Length: 266
Image 1 (cartoon, helix red, strand yellow):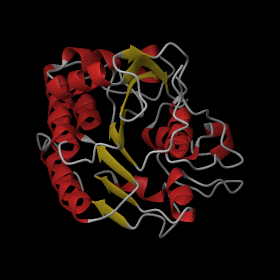
Image 2 (cartoon, one colour):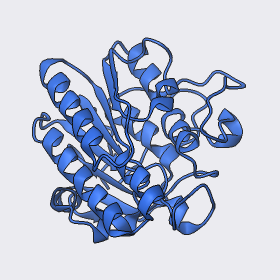
Image 3 (cartoon, one colour):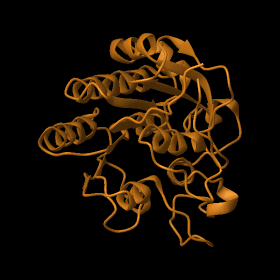
Image 4 (cartoon, helix red, strand yellow):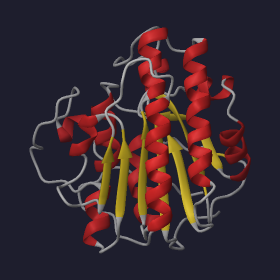
């Protein structure tokens, strides 16, 4: 068995909002297909209920379920108890984290000052993925010019297109293809010791999500980098709450008390 106990130096997390596993399989995604052959993956990662964007991101970065953090819709409110996010743990370790996103409520996923850089661009309706590409350009520029341990790049257009045109529509698959090109451009400049994580917050059906349907609750997960076996389909059950524990293990940091996810071991 291969584990992530050997510490790495950088992690790049890419989140493609609303990307279903079968959408990934059906879309034109040559780069993500390449990552699948060079890393470990599952098409059965489970998100949390309600399968709502801010709820799911909160569980991903704070590694607790909604009944603990209390975010049950897309409106932020204070937690009933203090729980550090992945960004807070990075800051406490005197490492640098940066975020790049185009959906403003994500600004609350960390304590003020935890990222050394945070870039938000307001998305616009039916822009054909232009804002995703602009977020990508910002990430490319900043990541090449600075030292960092964690980068988070969020791409909104897939979810926005699902709501407008329908999940699994041609436009939705085109949005996934656009995200593939965005992720490829950033990965082309990443150091070889970077752990790349690609995932989503939730899926979707018809023109919506938020439910416990399998189409809403199941998302893909790809990990590629040092210590990750090539072409391995992960057999264990994986939750989005396992992403942050996997990240701190890779960086050689301790998992904080209160997190409920588990670092993925191969």
